[in-house]
Image (tube, rainbow over all chains, first blue to last red):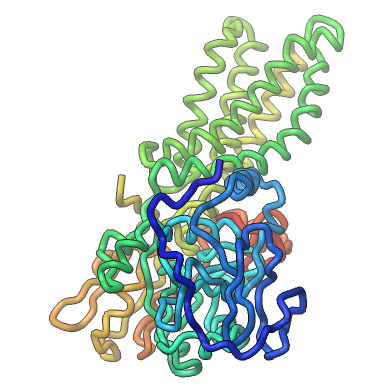
Length: 386
Length: 108
C-alpha cells in the first residue's frame, strides 16, 4: 500500500560541508550540542549528514501504517501519544538554500504536511507542541514564539541553511509573533497557506498565498472527520446513563419488572442513542443547514426532528396518559441532549469565538438542564401511571 | 456554505487606527477575512466573522489590535466552570478568560 511518489525525484545527494560523523543515535543532544530527532522513528527512511550531525530523512510517500495511525487518532486511539520527535528533518535532498517549513509534533500534522510535498527538497522544523496540532497548540502558545526561537537554536538550523526565512502554517499565527521571531532569531517568518495541500502552489508562486488559501472554511469533509472523536466522548456518557434508564424503566407499568424493561427499557436506550446520534453525528453533518446561529439551537432543532421520527415509529397510544407523557418525555430529553452535544461541537468548529460560546452557554446550558430534567421527571411520571 | 457566521456582536476585536501603519500583517494571518485594506490602512470589515483566535493582535508589530483571544469551545468553558483542567478537552480557560495550558489532548 506504499504510495510511491509518482514522479522522478533527483537522486543526487546534497553536498554539505561535513564536519564529523556524529553519533547517529538516541541521545537528545548530540556531540555537536544540537538536538536531533531520533533516526529510528518508523517513518524515517534515511539520514543525511550535515554540519550539525545526522539529520533524519523522511519521504512524502505515506506508508499504510501512517494512514492507519491517522484513522486510529481520529477515533481517539493513542491520540495523546501520537507524536514525532521535535527538531529538524530533511525531506528529499535539501541543501543550504532549501526552504524551511515549520510544523507541530502531532504525527497527523507532520504526515499531512509531508504527504503534500512529493518531489520537493526542503527542511521541516518540528516544534515540540506536546503532540497537539498546529491550531490548538498555537492557541496554547506551545506552537509559539518562544518554542520556535529555542528550536531554531537547538536544531542548529542557522548552520544548515544560508538563508534566514521560515514558512509557518497560517494557523500557527495565534501563537507566533513574526516580528519577535525576526528580532530574536534573525529568521523572517512567512505565513504559508492554511491547508498543506496548497503548499506546492504557494512554493511555486514564489511564496505567495492567494486569498482563497488564507480563508478557513468548514466543509462537509472536515466536519465529518471530527465526528468519531465527538461520538466517542458522547458514547462514554451514554454507556453510563443507558443502563440506569434501562433499569428504571422496569418501575411501574402493567407487567412485571423485566417485562417492563423489555417494553420500555429497550426503547429508552434506543431513544438515548438517537439523541447522541442527533447531537454528535447529524448536527456536524448538517451544521450549515440547521436554523439558528447558536450551536445549541441547531442541535435542539435536529433533536426535535429525530425525536418526532423515532416517536412516530414507536407509535405509542396517545389516547392514554401513559403514552402521552412518555412521548412528551422523550421529545424533551432527546432535544435537550442533542442540543447539549451540538453545543460541545463549538470546540471542533473553525469559526466560533470564546465570547460567543460564553454568551450562548449563559442561556443554553440552564435551558438544556431544565428541559432534560423536565423530560426525565415526565418520563418517571409516565412509568408510575402506566 | 462558505461563510459560516457565529453569533453577532460578540467579538472583542478592536483596532486602533492611529497606531495602524497599514503593514497588512493582520490581513495575512486572519483566517476569516475580518480585515481589509483601504487607502493603505486597515479597517475591520466583518467583525462578526472574528473567532478571536488572536493571530492578528499577536502579529501586529505596532500593538494596534486588541482582542480577548481564546478558544470558542463549550467543553473548555464547562471544564473551567467545574475547575477541571481539560480531561476530555485541551483548551481549559481561566476565569478571567485567558487560556491556560491543559493537560490532555484537544477538542479540535
